[in-house]
Length: 151
Length: 151
DNA sequence: TATTGTTATACTCTATAACTATA
DNA sequence: TATAGTTATAGAGTATAACAATA
Image (tube, rainbow over all chains, first blue to last red):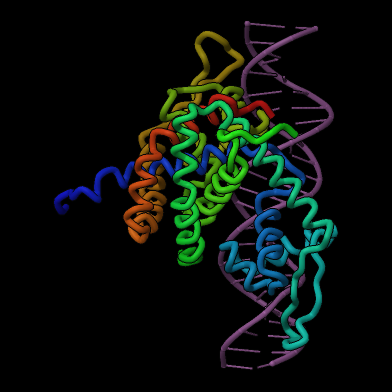
């Protein structure tokens, strides 16, 4: 092990706290009609437009057959629609429907409300500190999303 | 809707970022022998000592029969052991084994290493900001854990 | 041949309903 | 009766392996 410089202090602790925070928020999410998997797919479709099964599977870090099943359930529920890719007869393009967007929005509002309630109880100084950390958290999310799917 | 005071600014945005961070970290977690559910139970047992099925179910926000099944799988894998509660013949006490602790530790190290790798790429200013936010994040986790299980 | 996607099969995780055993 | 837990059953979500269709 090398020496620990000023930049190194507590980085392991930071990773640990971030992991615990994620688990904590996850456990705290109220139950909803949309599962996490379903919401994840709808969220990608909403942000990036229609996608192929393979692209969705890579993006969500699941296998192609798993994504086939998930999309089939979403289609049966009317939350996505499918069309054959005009440029490639093998591929299909999955798109979110208006009903899908509505469900997704509702799920986000419910979860955010829960988190908001906790923030309301937080010490004002802590709240200010977290506000100041928003850009850094955004950057961390970007890095995490970029480097995903490498497992 | 009431007026928006100085303390109110951006709290909705903060909740949103925290939710997105949690999802992002979750998707980023490398696959592991221990599922999230299994790791959650082992983590509780490690921190709080032997627990009843009912207590574990409440803590992890699942139903009693779901926890029965999960504990049965963990027991079959040698990660927990069970004894009848000496004070109540109906109840059993579930305890983590040495093998369970080892698996849990390994899973945490793997995930933390992934997060750590992202932190290494973060701008030093962002990293400093996040370090300063550790106590606030800790407090938020505590609030979230305390108020869980109210759905 | 390589790529896109589906089907077949199996295991984990979750739920509700009905049950057993103990208090 | 009430509580602690299990069993029965069903559905979502995941995986691997084998297959079909198109490029």
